[in-house]
Image (cartoon, rainbow, N blue to C red; front, top):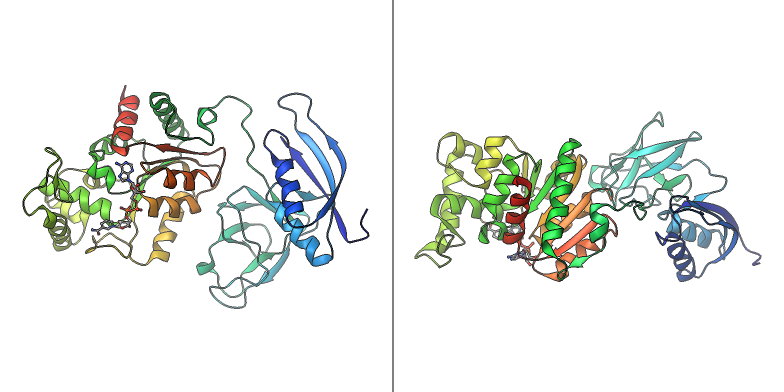
Length: 407
Ligand SMILES: NC(=O)c1ccc[n+]([C@@H]2O[C@H](COP(=O)([O-])OP(=O)(O)OC[C@H]3O[C@@H](n4cnc5c(N)ncnc54)[C@H](O)[C@@H]3O)[C@@H](O)[C@H]2O)c1
C-alpha cells in the first residue's frame, strides 16, 4: 500500500443498489486518489443495509483533504470522527475562505462530540453554528454577518445520501424519468396521489408558475387546486401575475383571446394596461378589495389567503406592485416557504424553476412540467429519486391533475 497519509472512513446504507459505492470509487479515482477496502459486508435481505470501511490515501495532507471532502456527500464519515472546525466570518456577506459548501441533503455536524442536525438543508450555502454549539443551520452568503461561526473543511460532517426507496412508491414508478413517452394518465394519478399525501401531512405543495400556465388556459385549473387546498404557496414572476390579470380584465393573454385563440385588435397593449390598472390601485390585493379584479389565479390567491411570492427579473414591465425587485430579498422570502415544502410542482418556467430547485431540500418531491425536454432534464438531473420531469403541455397536465383530484 502507498506510504502516504491516509484516513479510515466508514459508510452504511444501500451501497450497491443506490450506487453509493460506485460513486465513491469514481470520485476517488477521478481525483487520482487510492483506496483500500478494509471490510465490505453486503446486506443479506432487501432491507438490510450494507457496511464498508475504506482506507483513503492521498499524495499529501491537502490531497487527502480534497478526497475526503469529495466523498462526504455520499454519506462517508471518519471511523474516528472529530468535531467540526469552526471559523468566524471576518466581514459581512463573506464566508471564511475554507467554508464547507452545502449539498441539499440532510446533514449533521459534530460539535462538542454531539451530532447536531443542520436545519433547512439547502445547496450552495454555508453552515452556521451558534455560540453554544447547540444549533446549526444553512445560511446563504449574502446573509453572513461578521462574527458568525461557520463550518470549514470536511471534518465532523455527516451527510445522509438519498437512497433508492425500499417499497414501491409513487415516485419510484417515475424515478429519474424524463418522461415524454410514458403513459400520462398514470403519471397524473401518481402526482395527484402525492399532492393528497402532502396535504394530509400538513406540508406545503409549492407551485412555481410561468406565464404559459395562463397562455395555455391552465390558470383556472390551477385555481381549482388552490381552492381545494392542494397548493400551499405559489412562486413566479411578474409575467404570471400580469397575464393572469390581463386575462381577467381583457379576456386575452399576451393579446390572444383565450376563448377564440386568435389575436385581438390592440391586444398587444393589454398586459401593459393590466399592470397600469393594478398599479393605480396600489396592489393586487387592493384591486381585489375594490372590486377591480374579480376572477383569475391572482384573485383566487388573494381570496383564499394563499401566500405567493413574485420575484422580479430584468424582463419585467411595470412591474406589478407585489413583485419583489431586490432578488436577494425575494430569495429570503421564498426560502421561508421552501423550508416548509413537502412537494413542488414546477410549471413551465425555466427561470423560476431552476431558482427554486436550488433552494429545496433533496427530500422534497419535485415535478417539473415543460414542453422543452432540455429544461426538464436540467431539473431532473439535480436529484435522482425525488425529481421527476414530464415533457408535456402544461395546459393539459394541470387540467388533468385537477380533474383527478376532484374525481
Ligand atoms: N411583461 C413582462 O413583464 C414579462 C413577460 C414575460 C416574462 N417576464 C419575466 O421574465 C422571466 C422569465 O419568464 P418565463 O418564465 O416566461 O421564461 P422562462 O424561459 O423561464 O420559461 C418559459 C418556459 O415555458 C415553457 N413552455 C412554453 N410553452 C409551454 C407549454 N405549452 N407547456 C409547457 N411548457 C411550456 C418553455 O419551454 C420554457 O421553459 C420571469 O421572471 C417572467 O416573470 C416578464
